[in-house]
Image 1 (cartoon, rainbow, N blue to C red):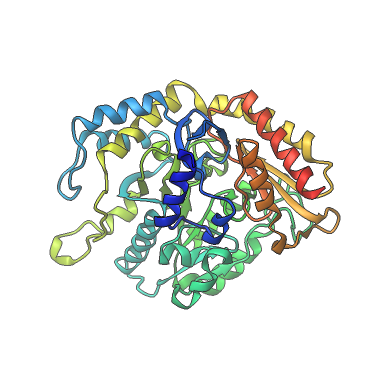
Image 2: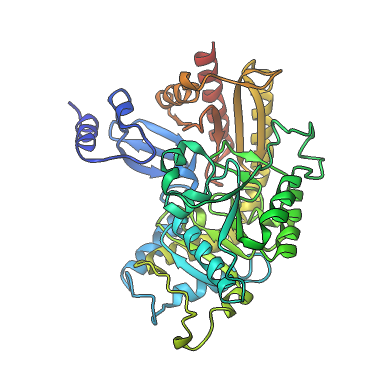
Length: 450
């Protein structure tokens, strides 16, 4: 038994892996990673894997990025952590100052949390308390879109709309007002999202009219519903949603955890619509995938509703032990510097044009490819049984999972979203790596779908 096999067996003895049916691991043992560099990971047998899913979309600038590693090491010798209540540190101040320069106008106040789900929870609590403290105590509910995903804690899971994650927990979840969201592949209006006027906003208009008076906020993933299969919709929908929120005094909470930091070709997905949400949640690329950290960023208007003498009881009593952790902040500060100084997003957009055209060229005529969608370096291929009717494949066949297993053997991580095969690589991926990812994906599709 080699070292790789030995460690895999020890892993199975102790570890319960996330988002996994552990019985699957009897066949496909955990792959023990020894090191990473750039877009690649290596196991203990020396086999390498192209990480085109950015290790769950957080690895923004490649594994073991020299600049981020150096910044984190330097911070480690100075200050590892400090309580963030009544204390602060230079890095946190610098991060917030720099972020205000790139965030949508008006987002100025930063609430630090530990991870994406906790940022969503903070935003929801913040919205409810704001309305309570501004003479709208009847506003106690939340709206969200179908096929949404916002995290795994109870509040975040409640506003999610993907049954795979939430179905069994429905008896303990919040009562959410669910709005039928955009579905550009199977558009009920028969339109194209590239030139439509977001007619699907009609469902939101109806919901706002009916429940607007009792609603605190609507939480959305701007432009890309990631866990739903990288479903992409028009910026016009966001523009109209912003107008509805203003009309009904409902907060727009933008979940930019997966879409922020250049993933869509702009710094934030909201930038495509030119809107400012009332609260924006950030994580994943925030630290380049180095450390867990998240932010709920809001406006002076919301912040001021909490600003009062202590005995008035208006403070936002929300905390996380590792809020503002200096090590995570050091990575986040360096990420912003790299994006600016090395023009990462501008270069990624040039790569995106090549990547998307090559994917379309390779897959558009495949008998089981129903849709190819892209924004920035995100590309998704939705597999179907019938291209004409858009009938899905039988989910029991787990076609996407079969493709994933074959791709691993060829050294590419193509972890699917159901039967949607997607690419969401580090922004630093190169042309040769893109070509290899496409080649392997095509081979695996052909082998599985014959």
